Image (cartoon, rainbow, N blue to C red; front, side, top):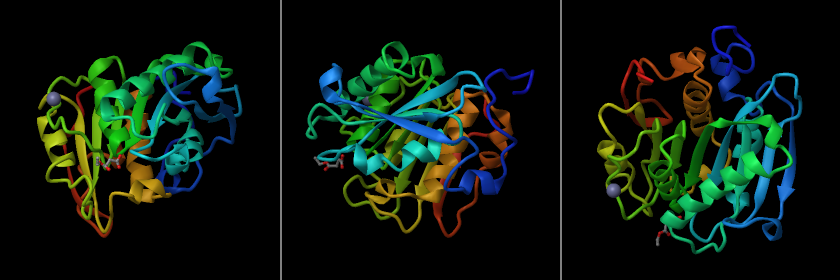
Length: 264
Ligand code: 9J3
Ligand code: ZN
């Protein structure tokens, strides 16, 4: 790692490295039974196999309403292979609402850093949250409840609370242009617009996408999520090139908004 940034992990990124199905780290995984934890429903921890590079930042990821960890499982190895410990969780019940999902994401991070078999691999000061739909709504709830989180990424997030001026955590809101369950007009756009103007924030609207696009491997979601997590959990400014200047609309991006340069 570079002497000037102790949190930097992995080689210098390229467009092809952030778009790749797997990053530079080989990964392992371990299953966490719901019977062995309190406050969430268990899950799967994906982590870089090697301990040669020290500790890694970590991310907990929640599924949406009626869904299981399988619905967001692709993010496990995709993100972990870039140099993160990733905990894809099940919720206590599949009907839990966003505020509960937020509490469960935080319980999962606490389990990960304090009790899990990989706790020594995790830097407990560098944590983030992601989630799909009501799990994306929970992602915003978790960040509101725990301002020390370093990054948050709701994926086609759903929440009846559409105002988030309380957030201190750099947040990338990812919506889908064809979402009829959490339409961007009533969910992702107000989420983004209500975040403080002084916060590092981004709005990525996927083109040709639906509410369920985050449930299968998606390179646009992956490349910008990786860049956001690296930039704000690892303070890795080598990824700033993929975020600033703001990406243009394209075949896969309907709209992108944000502040540049980033301030934190
Ligand atoms: O997690 C989700 O997919 C939330 C969207 C939803 O079904 O809300 C209706 C209650
Ligand atoms: Zn609010």
